[in-house]
Length: 238
Length: 238
Image (cartoon, rainbow over the protein chains, first blue to last red):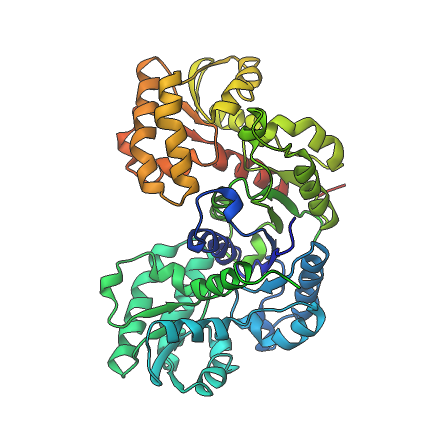
């Protein structure tokens, strides 16, 4: 393939990575195949569960993540994205092994918050419990002036977790209503916008009407796709 | 990754390959990430246009196709699918180079015709002009008892070609109406079912109501995904 080949480390889950490839294509301006971005998707749904490991209930996913990074490098990829928020817990060891840029999903989301005109202040964050507890978003966004409001423990266990499980089981329709309630709860608490910081959550939100939501949402899948497109359409690789 | 990794040679076009990954995931029975099929998508939208080469207007795509096959083999793939019908013109040289099975999209479509209970006799075929002219479907299906009715030259130039171009330009909504008219024209001529033998055409058909169609359609993207799933969920690799 030509110089700028995008690597996509996916399979976490597989529907989220397929959806990322679709959004990458739909967000790329183009009329013909050749206007689109050469990409290799390494979709490995056998990568051990990230939340499970972090909760002490399963094997370490890092070796499988690094195998994916190595596979993408061997395929000639010049930059890598990872459409899984929780996997960003291993961002630094993956970056160290990659030898090419890995675009961080939180930086991509921050770029979209800026583009949407969201001022410093309170925003909402919807993610897995692991992403929330590891502060994958909070610390990085806080340093930029945005304070993350998060769902309470009951909302996490009773709405977010079942919605994510429904998406992973190909039941996107069942995920919308609980996710809608959480978005609107965060808006009522003052969130100017809600960051959908889990690659499954946007799939559930998209399965129902947008006008049911009382705050704008930042779809981090799209944010990551836009970061990749800026790279691919930017200056040629050195 | 584990033993059975599916290779997907894509980018022809990129929306069709992303859609294939989505359908592969949605058609796979599963509750958890680990139930899904490890896969590597080699999406190279810079592969020279297949119809253009066959019409003497562009470079030979075979070297780029073989580079993709090689990349998928290096990534450890144990079988390969190609969600682009016209690319099957190069099936034999790709198979010779692959060293692993490549599931032919026409065989996959035949399996779905059988499963849908379509008896030997007339069926419709909607494809690119190149796929039609090269008899990629007709000869293989004819040997199994199905006779392909194809759209006439005016329908090919005035309806099929613009609909495919609309999908490649991310305008799926504009593709539905002309495609619907062609499906119904083939049904009126006696087609018991219509094979959508171009990976872009199902995307246009899906953008409008199914009850506007007067014959059942065989979505060859789904046929190919089902062939891959049968392999992945079948006996372990030797």
